[in-house]
Image 1 (cartoon, rainbow, N blue to C red):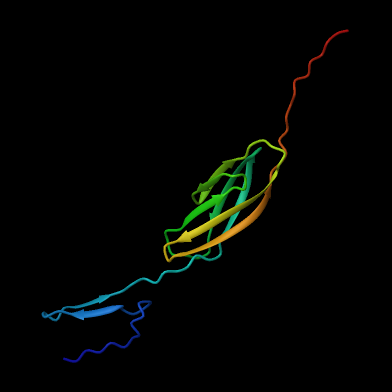
Image 2 (spheres, rainbow, N blue to C red; image 1 turned 30 degrees about the vertical axis):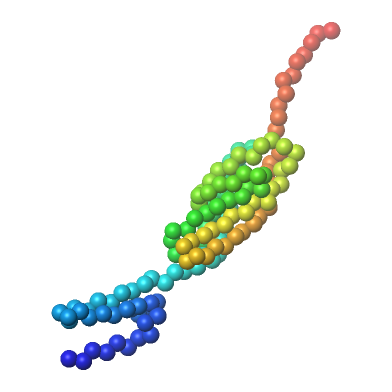
Length: 130
């Protein structure tokens, strides 16, 4: 019996290794190719004054993909979907950075400027006669 393999053994679509033991059992080992993270983006929705829900996405990338965040106020977080509460201050515009990473290893970083609504503060009205 004559056996031939027609392939490049790159591991992408063809076996990385082919072995035959003494009982003529053939074993082919495939290694899945790793797809680098690309097309990273995020959305930011202010759900209430000073509270923002961030949602990260990528167009392609081999899982698992981790998401890390720098909220621009000295705070950091992790997760694909995160909620962050900003402190009341005179600053309402922040530079937010999200980094999506996988084990290829590869990563892609996106930075956006977000502007929060100015919170409304109500003070009590005290009326006096006289």
